[in-house]
Length: 548
Image (cartoon, rainbow, N blue to C red; front, side):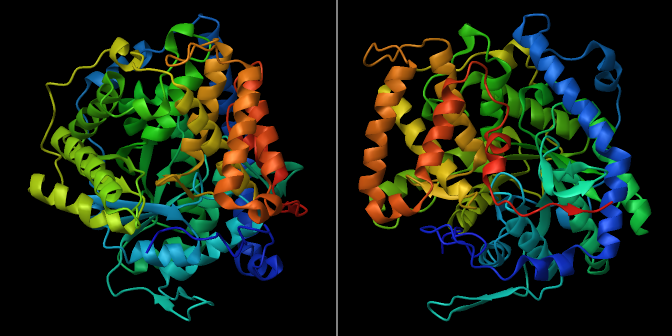
């Protein structure tokens, strides 16, 4: 069964929210104790989060002006050169060969936990559109999953979904530091979304998880520096103290999915050394970051999205460096996402897709990764077969990869390939359709046999911006990619989308808004940091709740 659904009770055609009254979820999740806990975290760490975000923005401006070049930091050379190790992983994270990810939709969570994967990353970030009801229902679903009371009945078929006796280990990904939760306000300011998501999960579930023999585990996204890792460590230490938890019980895995973070992997491990379990190679956001951090450089214009594969030298350098860095420090190195999904009505195409997954996972296990990600339950046995055949133990921490020594130039090497009209058209189709679904509350969307989330949509819109900004020419037609060419192609691709989905769904959806936003993001003078921040105000307009 596909790990996709229509969201938290949201109709794909109408966008009408059919979930119960939001106040019922607020009373269960936003208890007085939870409100006070979140307010304390925001007052203690909101300023620190805003400070590291300001550092991000200033650094990117310096890089764009040519005043700074990304490189390994001289001031932290001692951290990279010394011998030290992170804390040992908890028993249920020693073997994480196959991890499945997906949003916190009730049915999808049950399917993911029952999928046979070692780990399920419940995603409050890139595969969840942050409507207020989605975030609240997601927290309720997490509570029920931790207590094993989660179940769901399909209203159409009557089929009932419940947890198997054995399920995947739960890890939760909160939203990144750059996002706010505008529905919760402390001292007149919207709180950091990361504090909201991680805070509510820990408040309601940390003790229950420990009592069940597991623990509160998080995936931390979008970090760009070790200073940001330090802020996260301070946040989690305070949360442990405030909730009466053992210090260091909140264990984390950090996604290396930004270009700057690739230069600070040792330092990120060091800052979180008492609680970090490993690093994950978040390939799709990493490609987006390649575009964003080098947006001013005409020499760094990428080829078609489909050609920026893991075989590109810069991607090989980044992932192999992750393995070497992790294993030197006793941390796990988790590979990237296989975005393919089964193609039910075309066995030949389906086998081609599975062959790509097998090749991708074979490369990862041979490189020394300790596990990998998939987006669909049907891919769990495919990935497991590859890792079981080529990884003899629970992990590969003994593979130190001392043969890997990438330089800054290796990490910054520009992917090679061609820019084509079909590549441009594909970016338009995917970008507009994903934004339209996101505006309706869907963060995880199957499009053209791939699972698209915010990260892959970011690549599509950012790449079009890059081609226009640097007046790139298409290799197959010779045309310069310009706003006028984009407008023509958008017109034509909108007609194609309408033919694919039908008039009724086109008219009932939010395609006009999605088209307008995509055009703005693709033609603005400067590249927008995140489409999710640009589009956030277009989501539901529930009035803010004042926490303090």
